[in-house]
Image (cartoon, rainbow, N blue to C red; front, top):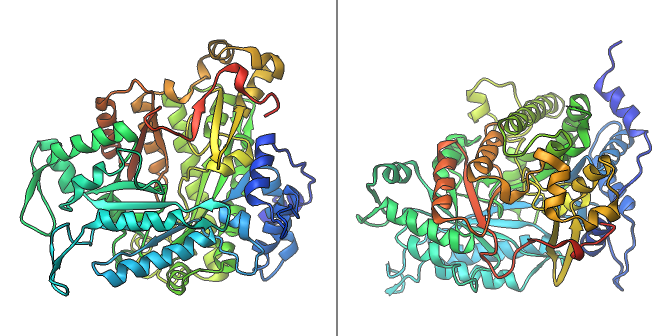
Length: 574
């Protein structure tokens, strides 16, 4: 008997699913996500939060509002899908801003710079993050005709944006996040590369160098490349050495491969994409925004296999959910609403990959793991596009379809200019109780520094589950050394620092091959990693078709989000 997808949705939405949260997940929800009254007391439970979000997102449906509300609610409560943080925080509010990612233009005039600064402040206050390209600003010392003075250069203006961000809390619960991109051809590139080395500046910014094919070819040939604004040339390998040294020292800057991003620009007639959102996974046009969501791969694991039927169903529901968010959203900028509604970009990705691999007994740093990664992301991208095509029939294609990449490639009309991405899923993976994004499990025991002034210690939930399957109680697990945990878990145990540079980058590339947008992944390196390891990561990422890359060497900053801990320092019930 053939059962329609909508019939399956009806059946599944009626199932009673018990909400299961770790103590740390409950704490994060309480501190950041649950609505509060004037006295600061929570006025909703986690279950009520998910019901609030599901109700608001389903409210745009023309038919079957309650059915879709129940479907969205079941998927979130079961921990299989979560949208980005602004949607969880703000859905249902009168002026709820639901998108995580924005890019703003910065043109070479004082008026444009401060217009963008004002717009960024509005976005941060509403809960979003912002990306900027400062490449159009003239270099330090260049003549300013209107004032007969000289320009102070892009780095000076980035400092202004950073200071403004410091004074604004996103929606009262999150500090503003930014991405600054500067093209490798800018004459001030050396100053930009080194600006974060002392750990005192641009604390609210990630920074990335926008590289070109010409630059990377000059690196390969040990040749010169042309700078912008002048006839000056520089030796490419010297600039790459500066990049490598700075990233080895402090983790910044990353690289963004702009030519590759624009080669696959879904709407090339609207102009180039010059920057990304703060974590690098979402290249966007000026003023464009995007909302993200992630499916928890660890929830689909079967004994030695994977539940592709349920995964397909959730992909379809998640695409519909994210498209609905565009309708529900209250945009902080009129121009952002216009561009976003014209392209309707969404970014559906995954989290919990490392947990799934551990469950399936597959080492993260292995060809088999990368085959699984590519299989899962290609399946997600294909099914997400299929659902976007169905939505185009039901609701209409995105406005800028004509002349788009998909139109030129002969695709049927789609509702969304992009459907797939891989986000870092920082706090939402905590809520879901799984590993973040496509990262390996950081360590068996670790400390998270994600709440202002408060550290969260835990044994990774998937490690606990796997040890329980092997007959090890929670209390016994607390007393095991890291080496003993590794022995119990066997060859499939692949914490972040056991994964080689090539293993990290090849996993990113496997997912990038099937992502419309980009992939947020940190190439986590041990403290002992060399500058040559950083260089290898950069060059391999370009060779394998990634759209960008970020590396981080353990303990290279005074403070970091994740720190491995000793057995005695973990929460016994986390």
